[in-house]
Length: 136
Image 1: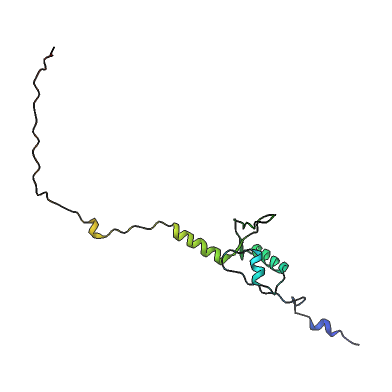
Image 2: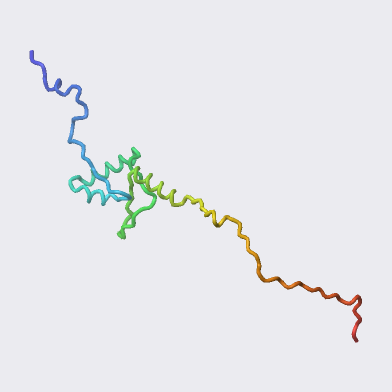
């Protein structure tokens, strides 16, 4: 009796069916799908779109709130960014917005005393008459 060796050879090897997974490079900073397709000419555009949507679902990529105007008919292009780049950009914005404590040199804080060399003239008071008579 013969045994089928083909089924035994695949036993324990899951995930080997189909073409090998493609690696995709993402640009630094914000990017569109067209930029990723241009950066990866060896990969089909549909594969790039699927990888980006899978990255957004797994939170490796972030879809930015602002879109890129294409100056063409249709909706604007979505912009994406890697999670690491987005967190670095957020940290940079926080560092810029953070108020910096002003440092004042000690010389400015020291009390300054100055003496006036010329005496100030004394103020003289003039007394008014006790009663004012009506002129008239």
